[in-house]
Length: 115
Image (tube, rainbow, N blue to C red; front, side, top):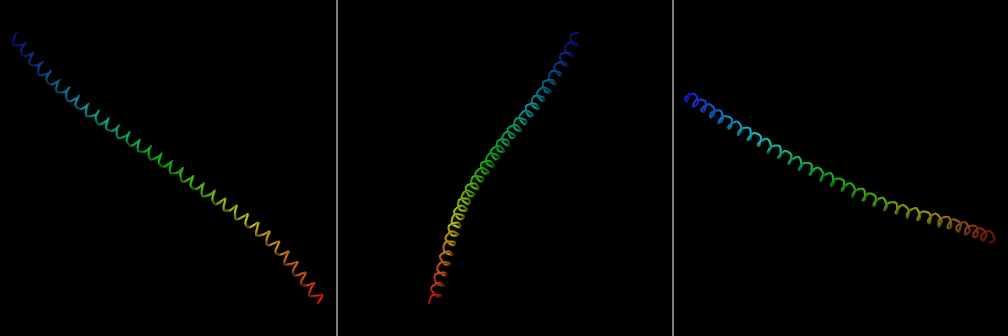
């Protein structure tokens, strides 16, 4: 009976040793998987943060360009208004000068006719 018990104890110790090794391998594999998953999550967060930052920089650059274009257009509109005003002034002056010229010609013609 004692021999049977000793044999059973040895079998149980072998099984216990095997199960401990299996448990350690499983824990190690689980830890490795967890570590890789955490690293992947960390990389994903970094990529997401970089993408968000790039998107914000791109949006800011777009806003700056739009503001520059708007300022440029305001400048062009102002110049156009100045040019239109100058054209109107020149057209008035031209009309006035034509009238003066016509009066001078008429006066000259009258003078020439009298002489």
